[in-house]
Length: 381
Image (cartoon, rainbow, N blue to C red; front, side, top):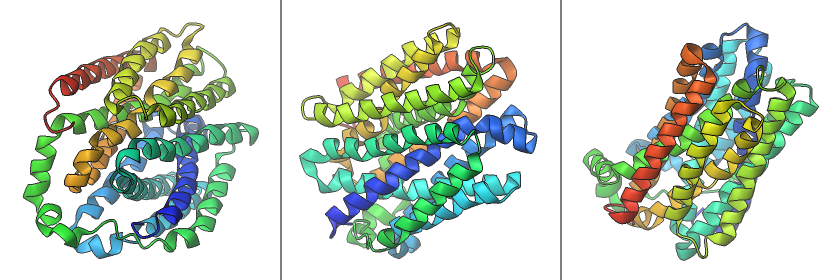
């Protein structure tokens, strides 16, 4: 990608659009998976855990020095496993096959997220915040469309995942053309290959990595369990699915607005505003009243800018410490794994609305951490 930034940008935008659609389908599809395979709520939630476990596994593999020569083609690998994962979900016909497909989709997500976000953060200098917001806005575009398509297919998730698989397969030749030399592990073997160096980098930026974990955990838990929280006692299932689309409309609008505002607003302020607004809106959703659906939709506006602006906030340090890019993604993947699992347990034990109240507490704590980093930046400026 380093030698073909235009090709990387176009291919990356297309892949991120489909990727957003794939991730957005899991939440609205949970009730269908429960009915198809006779699953309990926690069992159905395993698909979210498998997705993010696959992403974390791929990121960890990317950090292993012996695999560095192969990681230059990670965009092609990502497109291939995403296509196979979608086909497994749509056509395996058994729950273990669906979980394996989710793991494969997560692995593709991990490879793409490290590669493309890291590339945009390091290759465009002062324009990095703008381009990172644009790249991740395309993720939101796909996420807006996918739940609407699912509703139009009367909840037949297999048709929509099959369509995504075909889309990734069609993009595979373009992805394979990307010889990504941005992952130049050999350029600084001491920094990139040393486990102790990775540990030192992680410790130095520990508060920031925790913030990324909370941000992704919030996003995945909110959208993954939003339909379950809203449907039934609050509104019909199809209406809850529609509010998921509204969530991603506001999610995408927030990222698109952030593209322009990034010229004038520091990434740290985007992050602080996102966490603070999330805390308030989660309480309103938790109340379950007439405003719950609208508050859920507006949560997209709150959490949408978190990931790209956390990455943009770290961009100056990523240039100096390349391993930080993968560590940031690892932290996000860990949050993606823990978030749905935590919410699944709480939903099973005390009700999903109570779980959303706890998520509000996490958002408040994250807001305090952001203030701490703004006042005393430490490792992240």
